[in-house]
Image (cartoon, rainbow over all chains, first blue to last red; front, side, top):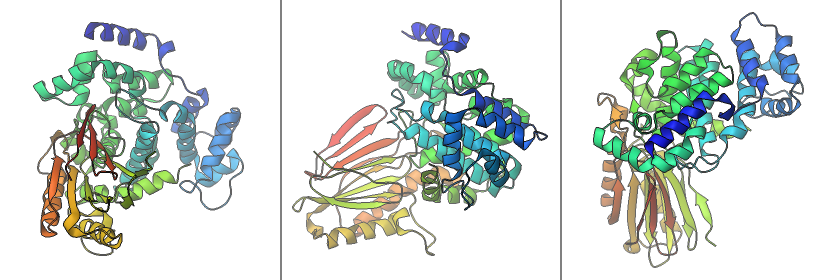
Length: 286
Length: 160
């Protein structure tokens, strides 16, 4: 059984055709906005080529969470009013919803729970980045939050059949759920997620978030801070039960991440106490 | 058909038979109180043991949410002598540096919840708490039973 799963997953990661896809526009916009010299109109033109995404992006631009008050009726207007970084985040929300907003069986997440979890981690990670004065990367924290668990969409079926063994491994070896995933199935949801982002041509910093969100201490030096921010946001959301699945709290809160972000004890507790505000912010994204 | 009511983080909900109150818990606690004669019950989903006291939402904290839940049940016509409680949740992160105060939130929530219920003389029939699993709970007001789904397994507690 284990050998079969390992073999099957090996095939999947080596054949990107079997990994989930998403509208090409998202990967292009994420990369373009990563370039500080990119022209506004180039990004707007790129988005406008995809009519379905454009409609959803405009709807989101006018949601209570993103809106600045004035009605936004074109992508050009959105880029000027909200800025390119925010428009990029909105494109990612619009482009990933159909993939993430579904039931994730092996992890015991009902339809909508993984999606809401991603949005909550996105909102909270952005709030943490702003709170700690890392404002220039707050948008990346948001994007990373949305997609950090994308690997679960592929791994879910296999987790379902190997669940008993994974849990036994967690208990016997006293290791986290994600380490047990790797031990039993050969891959954990972080590694599968990284492969998916490679297929989508997402930049390195986002791949690192997906790859190391449960083990920020192992992230490359240049992305340790952003990975740590998403790691803390993810942990606090799970503690609050937001998107908690069959893997429960069999994870860690990394000390190194807390140090990297410079979170004080009281700040951590305060963020946890204010989770209801995060849930309100998430409901304002639609 | 039971009416399913989702109770969110830091919310309190009171309803009658045949409603079902559902919530999802990590380190939070779900406090389910049932009046077995009137077949009315309430669920409070608390985040933390105590608040700092200034203008905070009382539903967030065990020490303010439990009195508020009891008050709502009183108003709904429940009698204290017919009430009993079941509590679930209070999980902790599996690997956690214990010097961080957030590490003990699950434990602190459990302690405060038990203290508040004892002070109010509400007997606790079930305390399915602690560990590192998340819990999805369904509180059935037709007979006060509690279904707890956790780590792929399901348990039902009937005692009221």
